[in-house]
Amino acid sequence: TQLLEQSPQFLSIQEGENLTVYCNSSSVFSSLQWYRQEPGEGPVLLVTVVTGGEVKKLKRLTFQFGDARKDSSLHITAAQPGDTGLYLCAGGSNFNKFYFGSGTKLNVKP
Amino acid sequence: GAVVSQHPSWVICKSGTSVKIECRSLDFQATTMFWYRQFPKQSLMLMATSNEGSKATYEQGVEKDKFLINHASLTLSTLTVTSAHPEDSSFYICSAPGQSSYEQYFGPGTRLTVT
Image 1 (spheres, chains in turn orange, brown):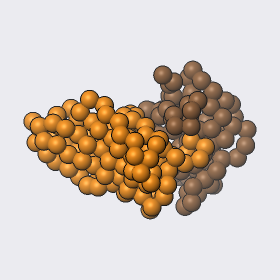
Image 2 (spheres, each protein chain N blue to C red):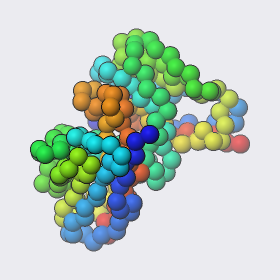
Image 3 (cartoon, rainbow over the protein chains, first blue to last red):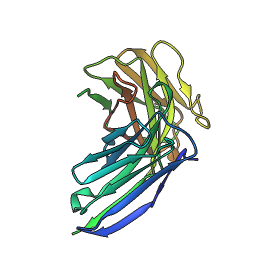
């Protein structure tokens, strides 16, 4: 059982469209991270959010941490084929221990 | 940034044999390391926390006797899959925390295939 549930599980869109991925939990986390992973490789950190209500922008990506620090969202504007990959959220608890969400597989078609 | 390596990057073994996977922090010390398992098209599942000089702590449902973890130095943790079976075939990834409580650095992963 995953502590964090992501939705949608799969997403296939056309280049130029916008999308939002959600990460929800009933648990409170001290921090929330988003990663992107390519097949056969380790996950690559995109962002860390630590304050409830915090919003961070990374070029076309916007990340938000829920006020109660139980949920987060990732919004991508004008998606590009290079955005294709597995997006994972991870909630941080004590002692640097992180629990990953169920994952969202994004495919952006040219 | 900090670098974590894993060896081997991929391994094939026969059912019933044991295989050891190494996780090294190359330019920093790590008193704690984490081991994850990832099945195809699924997310990472935390298996255990490796503690330097003491016993590993395992997540619920992970068999301690099957997945032996040793953290003998500040830069090396090993995961040994004992008596491997085909259902143990997976992508195993380790990570080590950075200086802040929010940092963690992932290894490139090890693909284990048990035939």
